[in-house]
Image 1 (cartoon, helix red, strand yellow):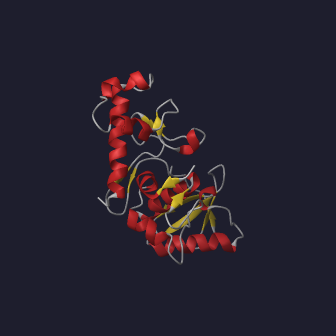
Image 2: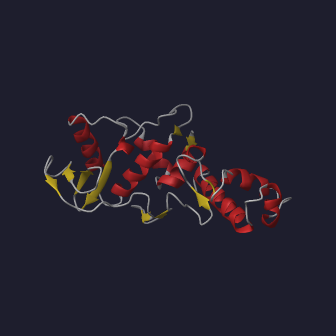
Image 3: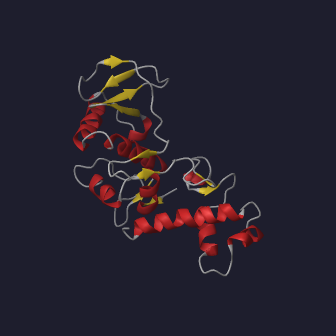
Length: 208
């Protein structure tokens, strides 16, 4: 599944300008699907971007670059989304799979210590003071599941894409109350959530 920049922006919390800056040389992250003429991101690209935004809310960008560079020095060259990275004060830690151990990637590189794992999918506030949506549930009736439609946001509990419902209601000929005639599992509130989420994605596209 390929995610356009505006949807990647809303789900990750990165601004459109950050996405442009982060894929420029030296790139923090190059979109797996395509970078030109239009950037298209993979699901795991978005997970990595969200991690970067969460780290960036507390640390300078250079420290994030240092952490990624340290990963490469350890021959850890998988996609950034493969690693659990968290921050505490001035540094970034690589957390092991069970969350019981972590390695400092910036301040005291290679030093191991114990700490708890922050959940990158939970809502948080980015460096601009803006609220970043819950990744798995960006609206009450909208869900993101990697194994459902490749991670494209859908109406909760269904395979109906949010933008399909938003498009259905776009010209006003179909009301939110009548959406269930086309998609029986889509309630009025789910339809309204789809329109609201679609509006936020469109705003990113228009630079709002």
